Image 1: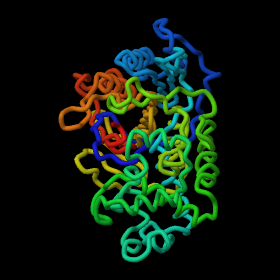
Image 2: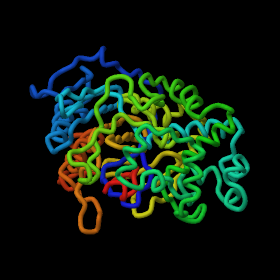
Image 3: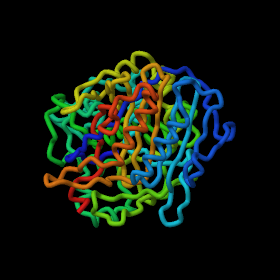
Image 4: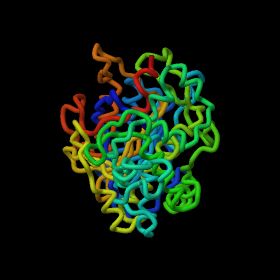
Amino acid sequence: MSLAHPKRRRMRLIGTATAVLLALAVPTASALPSQTVSGRPGTTAIADSAHRANLDPSALSGTLRAFHDAGMYGAYSAVRDGSAEWQGAAGVADVDTSRPATPLMRHRIGSITKTFTAVAVLQEVGKGRIDLDAPIGRYLPDLLPGERGRAITVRMLLNHTSGIGDYGTAIFATPESLEDNRFHQFAPVELARLGLKAAPLGNPGAEHHYANTNYVIAGLLLQKATGEAPEKYITTHVIRRAGLTHTYFPSSPYITGPHAKMYEAGYGGFNPPRDFSVYNMSWAGTAGSLVSTMPDLNRFYRLLLGGGLLAPAQLQQMKTTVPIEGSMARYGLGLFMTKTPCGEFWGHNGLVLGAMTWSLSSPDGQRQISLGFNLTRYQKLNGNNTPEPSPIDAAMDVHVAQALCGTDGIPRPVEQGALPLPATHQDLPPSAHR
């Protein structure tokens, strides 16, 4: 997820999910054989017994294990190729007990929440209750009065061209604030007002400037249009409609179900990395508080981009993109798109304290990966206070390239970055890491 990204590191590996699948049944873990990979504790995989030739369980297991060997604490990955599926995990969920990571662990998915929120808003657009190109001041005049409310449209919120600043610098100004806010309950309108008070990132409609404030306001808009709490609406009309069984908005600082601890290194500011798996996610709300599993994310993007959650007109609007400054990728309404050596991919990424997630899909829904891991901001900062690429990054790139491109499609040398993907959205201002 992201609270502010003033120092966005260009992770090569972020994709986008445009899955065009009609409701293929997803095999459950209990219906698939489990196997230990190379006899190494904490590295497990589940594979469809009739996998296609270009979904290579052995290669996927090996590249995920290499991701752990490079320094990642624990990771869980779900890959699909047509009707074939592979799920794997490597490393540990808890560094103190060496409890192994497993493929179906619940995970904070951060800004991937934005896709869910955008779908809900677009459903209301389809019902005629919200106009994408109407000024936000029409719906929320008390929050955005005057010229600003007239200049910023609903569309600008969803594609991050509103120019509104981010509230992150206000609530996470110091390392101490991370602990101070661990159990603090934030109200969405409080976050929105903090973001609106922050220095604007640009002029309305001019350029893409990623800010969580946009999606907190989108949640308030959804509440105004439906009369329901946005989390309740999204749960009923998006999560349940998609048949997701392990995706939910947390109602407390604790994650329910099997999950890993989530370790934040803060670019060396926390040594050893600190566990933030217990945290009140009200600070993220409809911008980034969801919990999910990797197979649930694959199913969600398949159904969404295959037309299962939105009418064609609204899906087309969602896939109407604007440039992301300094990137080959483009951003739609809660989605981004990037072109790679093995084709076009759609989806989103998410980053919160100690938890990172990617969810990527080919436009035809044949190739998908969702990858979660539990150690974040492990890179070192250089003299310009910019994160330096890490061997962990290179190993992650190789695993995702293996999943999306297959053994024969990985560009060489993969160690130098297999896929050109957009920047990772940061959830904390730099001052919070020191």
